[in-house]
Amino acid sequence: MIFILAFIIPDITQSLNISDVARGVFTNGLHRYSYLAVHVTAAVLSHSMIQPYDKIKARGLPENVAESLNKLVVVKLNGGLGTSMGCKGPKSLISVRNENTFLDLTVQQIEHLNKTYNVDVPLVLMNSFNTEEDTKKILQKYAHHRLKIHTFNQSKYPRINKESLLPVAKDMSTLGENAEAWYPPGHGDIYASFRNSGLLDQLITEGKEYIFVSNIDNLGATVDLHILNHLMSQPDGKRCEFVMEVTDKTRADVKGGTLIEYDGKLRLLEIAQVPKAHVDEFKSVSKFKIFNTNNLWISLPAVRRLQEQNSVDMEIIVNPKTLDGGLNVIQLETAVGAAIKSFDNALGINVPRSRFLPVKTTSDLLLVMSNLYSLEAGSLTMSKKREFPTTPHVKLGSSFTKVHDFLTRFESIPDMLELDHLTVSGDVTFGKQVSLKGTVIIIANHGDRIDIPAGAMLENKIVSGNLRILDH
Image 1 (tube, rainbow, N blue to C red):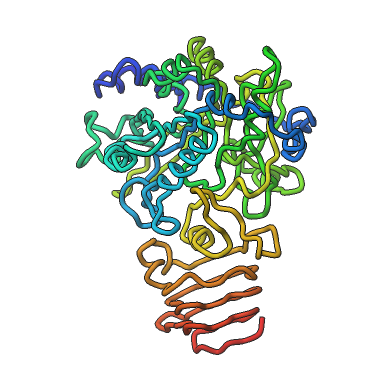
Image 2 (cartoon, rainbow, N blue to C red):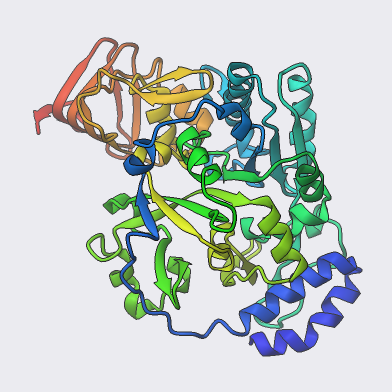
């Protein structure tokens, strides 16, 4: 199929009047996909390729922290919508804590850095055509904050009809009938789009050397001074051009991408690249013990060099989709971390789990809104009153999927400091000052409703549809 696509791609791009830059990016990705059919075997990662965070932290910090910070840029991936949580517009504009949005918390974090160390760390947002307009409107509220904010757009690619191999789009518009015809091609597009925007050269001219890239919905992805110092303290010629933060895999992370060694280079292996016969092996916590947090530290001069040489090499992920009307399409995507093998002296750092705190669902949202975390200067830290280093496992049912529905079901967020596991299914509401401890399972049968009364304390309980409360 991909070879047929390669023949018709000039007609696709010309019929849609795609710009030369966009055409080059799209066709380059297509050609890379042609060479994907390679068998990759995992090798044991050497200690020099993956370093424990504690070892890096033990070296301490120099007096000139400000000098290193002035060479740093924070980049947040801001191309996603909040539709999976029932919200319209950019996901970054969803309120997550004390009416602060993901974007608010990011701004607070960087502004705190700039004030504390008297430095100039800018924020760069990589938007998509889905998020650009709403994001630019909201940025006006930060006009008087102590940080510079830049934006650029990632590319847009045409979705391809799976049967005819022709583009679904009729023209370049993303409105009306064409709304589903285009898509942002994954965060691996950052390298080309960053350079094409002119921001890459501008920031290098301003003396910036590294970007810290992360998903805007990962509330644990804050600037870490110890990792930054590790990068800056390396001698010239031996500096890490790419650092990927990884963390220990749990059963909740079995689908996360992992690092492998192949031909003496670190590579990112995603589940979408694994043959079905080996998926269970990929998910094995004993074989693949770490996964990619998508917190990345990347050398700006290295990005420019690789872009000039057209040698940023990323595996293409084929993502099949079904549009609302039932049409089956394919879209080609890349992941920013997949470029790790293109950079010199690449390194993985095994960081604490606290640096991976994504909010993908309302179950995650409940955790970060609770007293499990305290909020200071935009950063969430685990409460010292929590006796266990791990977070509870929370699974909320379909009645809680949308943020609006989720919020109406809690008069206040329960006390969860001593909670291990929470499962809620069906029509359930929580009164004020509810306390949850141990394992709590609440199941309202179809047609029934359960109202947990204000002040209730549930510890190791199963609450069923007829309001019987049983010991777990």
